[in-house]
Length: 312
Image 1 (cartoon, rainbow, N blue to C red):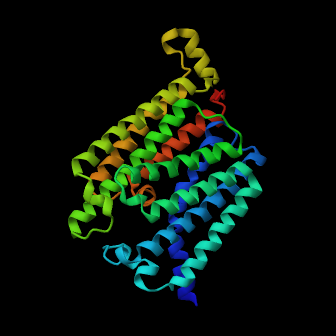
Image 2 (tube, one colour; image 1 turned 60 degrees about the vertical axis):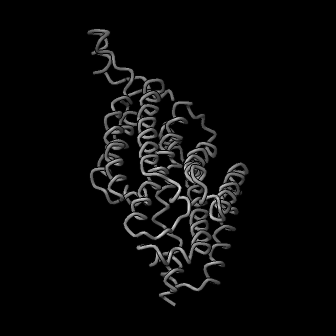
């Protein structure tokens, strides 16, 4: 019984819930993180997406069980290893999908539609769209975009066009990086565990990673330039009085070097073949983890510490 419970938890892959923290992007960047009612709504949206995410992974594992047995690491998954019966996996997936929809509709009807659309999209992905080159990357990226928009939707927040471009670019960057790392696994094992991989050339995926990596930091830079809150600390005002050259009213631009470092580091990880699971990289790669922590801390200081007047 204990082993079954552990297997049921493993197949839900809670480590992938890390992706769902992107739902908090809108409430964090709009300076409303500590508004209790809004935070509770985003929190429940986060729970709904955790349930939905786990349900989609279970469905995918059910369909991919034979191919997973050929994969060097996926063969240890509960279904592929035989530690979890197929009937229990199906039951768990259905229950999690139902709970995700029930939680979402209790928060917001539009969130319910987003969760429903996400589940349908992921089901189609698992049923065959993941085997179509380019389409597979676009669907993975769309999953990230839906999460960010869900977080904005439940608090009725406006998203800057520059932030939207940044979200799209980062999503495509992570998705193409995932495929690039999977291609490394294919070359090392000579086992075809994903049909679309044989239709990708390494040079093509390299160009995707480079293109979307550049787009990511550039769109973030434009977002910080056009959407930064106004400086308010006396030191900033004093500097502004000294000279127009020292006027500081683009504080978020201070985060750009961290973003560039993070993208450069993640690209290095991609080309080493270690980014098949972005959430694992984020939680285990120390340089990247430090960069993300500093980035979040700096944004928090700028928006919430009184260093600026939030106008986003």
